[in-house]
Length: 210
Picture 1: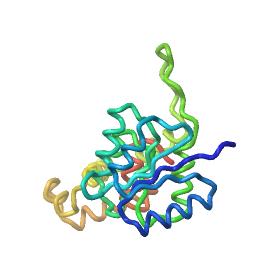
Picture 2 (picture 1 turned 90 degrees about the vertical axis):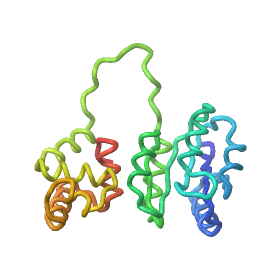
Picture 3 (picture 1 turned 135 degrees about the vertical axis):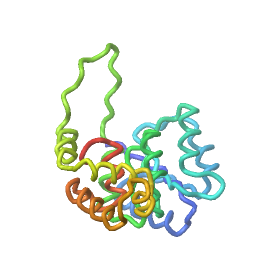
Picture 4 (picture 1 turned 90 degrees about the horizontal axis):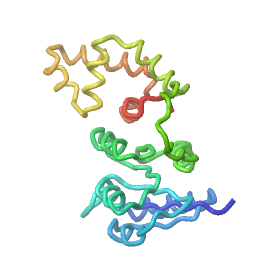
């Protein structure tokens, strides 16, 4: 199998070095950039068998801006976003821009391995003629089953959580106490089997269980 390339863009030099060391040890070719402008200059075409590991927050240009500029130029790479901030609205926007997934820093080796497996999984070519509606996948059916366990109020609460609202703000919007919001939020995350807000966001944006 020809080597697969991971382009990694992060302004933290120490993290960039350690991530590159791990990726190279795992058998990937690595191209690393601490400056997003340099990354944009290097990625002037869509490399084959490659993906982009992209930090969300960087001085001068955010990861979202880098991704958007690449898309405008027709450079279509699978993108994995990294964030050390747990910023839910940014994570949602990243997924809507077509990111494969996003992971929180510092992340475990297993989380990065899973993200890379998604990034390098085969992509289906768009059909040349309209296809019949597809049956829900196992992952989509599992998501629907979990969602069906939620009460109407739990669904309201997590919808606001995914929009980045704090518990106090959600309580004011829904006219309930903060304690009640916390209870509904906890119950919803248990039913959805989401360990963190990032897990919850990924689940709600993709509509399927990973």
